[in-house]
Image 1 (cartoon, protein in one colour):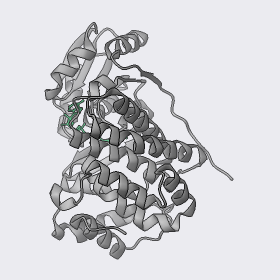
Image 2 (cartoon, rainbow, N blue to C red):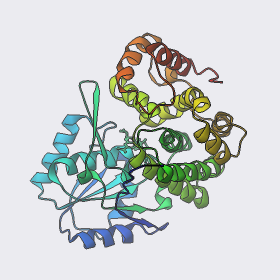
Image 3 (tube, protein in one colour):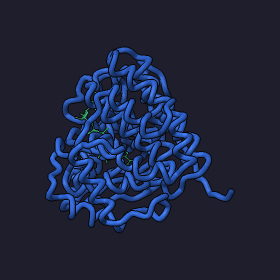
Image 4 (cartoon, rainbow, N blue to C red):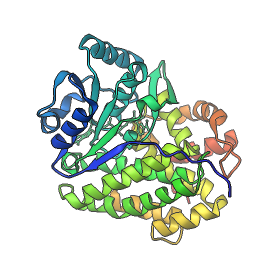
Amino acid sequence: MRFEHETLGQRVRFATGEAADGVAREVEALGSKRVMVIAGPNRVGLIGRVTAGLPVAVLHDEVVMHVPVQVAERAREAASANDVDALVSVGGGSATGLAKAVALTTGLPIVAVPTTYAGSEATAVWGLTEGGRKITGVDRRVLPRSVVYDAGLTVSLPVEVSVASGLNAVAHCVDAMWAPHADPINMALAVEGVRTLNVSLPMVVESPEALPGRELSLCGAYLSAVAFASAGSGLHHKICHVLGGRYALPHAPTHAVVLPYVLALNGPRAPDAERRLARAFNSRSALEGLQTLRARLGAPRALRDYGFTESMIPDAAAAILPSVPDSNPVDVTVADLERLLRQAWAGVDPG
Ligand code: NAD
């Protein structure tokens, strides 16, 4: 056994109903006097519950999925014009992503308050889109200094969005098992993430306003994101990355649809991952476990429901091919990718 593992340093505060207190403590610890709050325009109720008592210099609400560069530029200008010294993001991966874009060029510290299961708060990965291309990178400056989890902020997340986002977290775990830097540490986190989310997501669907399912899902999302942060992007993430950036497909539903097809391709050739994932899903096989969970959740089914057309398949497959990681357990050809995308487009049984 030989590996090099890096654990990213950040504080996590987890307390339902205590977001305002947690954020205030983190902002105080940073010595910040002028905070820029970044949150989507429809998150007004949430913001009030989080920012009470903060020295807010500016509230920036232009949040767009996949962070177009012009949107990032405007946020950077707002940070500079208001002379801010810290960023507080409240929202899903899009709000966190915009804060990261500002931190990337300014070095400003981020306190992240996540309200979905995207997990961006635990990674040093940033992403921007320009001219239909998603550019990503890894930079320690964008890793939030601290994360404040309050499950009370997530009960308003619609069930459909919760399901897609939760499966995005499951995808972080599954893909971590064969990602370029998979190791015993991140695989352990990933397996525990699957075990947690497999229990918690059906609880959210059954009782969206009940806190136990929401709390457990946030825990699972964090485990998944920490696993992903050190394991890196495997085949699944490379595929979704191209689909999101090139065709503007929605992030979480795209992950939710594509995952079973990647698992069907890789699982049989990755016996250790397959065995451990099957156990985490409490199922005979990893794919059967994932599909059982997806059925219980009423998961997104086909890429064609999200704006991906059949005619895009050859272009997408060619764009994905160069980024297939060497670590992938199966050698992948452009024909394999076309087949996978065709299945995901139609939403047919991956088995
Ligand atoms: P999102 O942040 O766009 O949120 C999805 C929708 O849910 C939005 O309409 C948002 O307003 C709404 N919403 C969020 N919280 C809510 C709440 N509590 N109640 C009601 N509505 C709520 O989507 P996402 O899936 O969380 O994030 C996707 C983005 O994050 C993508 O751009 C993706 O690339 C990025 N991402 C980055 C990383 C990383 O490590 N860098 C990891 C995962 C995702």
